[in-house]
Length: 177
Image (cartoon, rainbow, N blue to C red; front, side, top):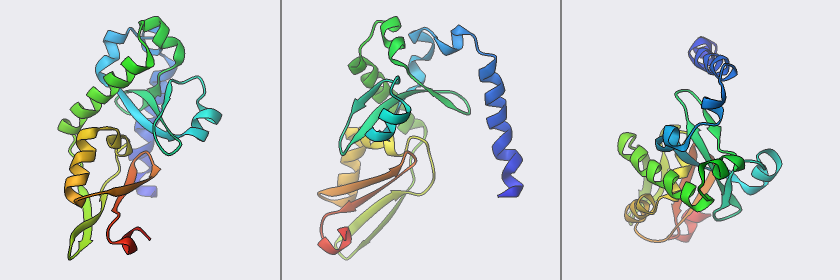
């Protein structure tokens, strides 16, 4: 949208300029400086292998990988394998830090959901607005339990992008189709 160009591009360009001026304190920070900003992101395994092989990744489900980012004000950067060694932690510890931060993020940024259904109750749930961590919320057992409460039973989830998912109840069968 042309009228939104400056609103979208100015923060992005500012971030690029800031990153170019980064020293090792920003690109290789001590863990304690960024610990509370480490977040998980979901990516297809194929994309990770092709585009992000030097970034820490752990398999999840359905050929999805969990990658880890440090959330900056208008951007994020991926955590590289070599940082884990420098920090003296393993991927499982990083994963737990990211999940704890994700739960904190839920408290600060509640998600609005669009819910659709029929006579038997809600059968389709999806986020109403974009958020870089919408799909990552599926990593949280607490969030998945809330989805189960809304949909009331077993559901399937589609994750077309990091900021969107669709949860569909498996009953009635026509809804899944």
